[in-house]
Length: 487
Image 1 (cartoon, rainbow, N blue to C red):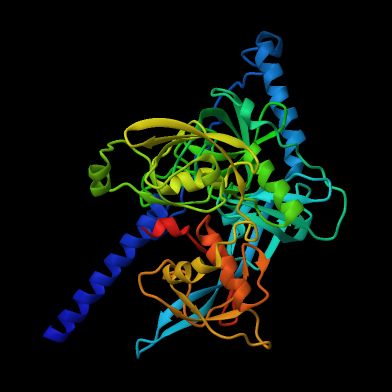
Image 2 (image 1 turned 180 degrees about the vertical axis):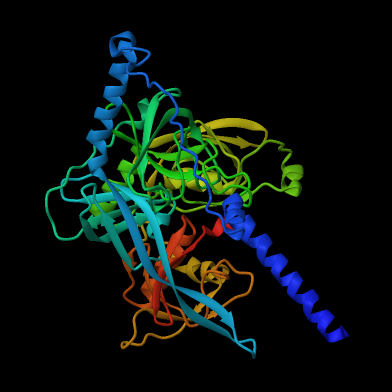
């Protein structure tokens, strides 16, 4: 037998062996019998003997209290879910790119989002979170019965993270009442309702874990709850045992988003009293109403503390506006605001946030430190509208220099005023860019270049300022922080 024949026989043997192994593995012992030409044997299966219980361990009468609680949970859920909506959004955002020559380009990128909301008026007004609908052009809501409607944005409050929508097409809707969040106590039972992960209507139950919880300088005095709140629940209601909305679910605690982006047992809701204030001002005036104190502030660094001989937290007054509530109350430069309305002041941002959220016309105690002595002044809060807080004419140019924008001339064929330059390191850097066109401030249309300048200068000295802009072919909104935060 020559070498070629032997090689062929070896390869054939290997092939047949491999085929037989695969066949046996896939067909078990029956495969072996088939391979040997015999039919596999089928032993008769012997059914198992089993007996299922036909009675429950307890009768409902044995757990009467739990039975009533179970029925009441279900009754409460049925009463409130009909007022909760799922929200689907879509739009186009502007993405900044650099071409091969280092020039900045704007590319429109489609976006989609999901969230929840609650109907709060018979006319179909919905309260949700600002971040649910931010920069989205189309909003669609799905009701409890599956009906879908388009919705329009009536107004929003980015600082509070609240937005008000209106269901298009009219009709009569079933709203939920906004309860009194001042009566909420730790340990009370609550229910969170929403659209987590886009799954649809979902109800979770828990308790109020804490009140007046602050998670950032702008997110303050929130309710903390252990009712499960997941992505998609944002904007949905937190309700009490009467079915009243006591909060709008806004955020979940994520110690490390890389590990787990879901619920960690800690969720936060915006108290209903703050929601009610924002809702009424938006419906009545088209925009949120801010409180105004009339001061420019600085954070306390080591050098300032050493110069003043002050070691605690607070915010220092730099200047006091003529005729402002601060001047009327007796505030002076170099005063350090320690407490505002009984709450500790950590820094300028926290103080501005508290002032802006104060009720216009209310008189509040402000504790200050002045030359080594602690005093309490009474301040009556004014409205920080763009008309009512207009800065003195001589200060407009100086404020705009700090904002860091230069505006071009009006073009009647195009909306708004063009931004021709944004100064590096200024307040506007990262928010505005050359080529943007500003056509509104805080929801109010600007009529001219002078009008825009005065409104902008007045607003940024007192509050966060929302600018409505056109960038390329995309309209959107940017928010400038208060000028004091630049320091």
